[in-house]
Image (tube, rainbow, N blue to C red; front, side):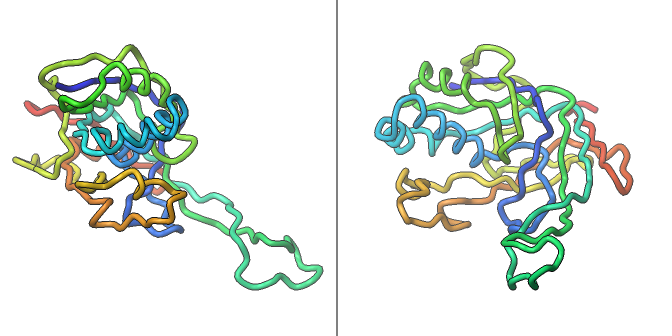
Length: 238
């Protein structure tokens, strides 16, 4: 069974690829299964407490399958912004912008969705649909903090996925020539709550507790320039 929820963006979306460095500025077009599960875990802890959330994670959240129906159109804004970074070397006394931080220029990308994002979670027998629906109501951002989203209606349980959904499981199948090949990170098999708990002292390793799945997003690059890239979703029969 799947539980489907539609989210509309109420702010620009931004999420770095898992392989990006701290200074990387490119963004993915859609949230990843890892980001979605972390958002659900955060809400579960806030609503039900750490112990119940940890039990739900180990039982079914971490292993849940994720499917996405990308927005119909996406425009990625390419921009340079001023950011503050900790100084590597102390500033000279009396110099401009003296202090702990230094000003610098960084490249950033922000995506605007011109449609809703369809999110589907594949649930096993141990999953609690009522609890998950309540958590989905409380998710207000996906990806980088500030990438605000708003649920468009009550989550709906279905036995089979509607057309247009892409299961993020690494199985590419037949790839369209217009598809945009990318990698979305997911939770690795057997990853426990202690490993995703930032206060436990345990580290998450890319390739073990955090794995990359290849995904062919059905997007065609329509137009681009120095300042933007415009993508349109291609239907299967187009």
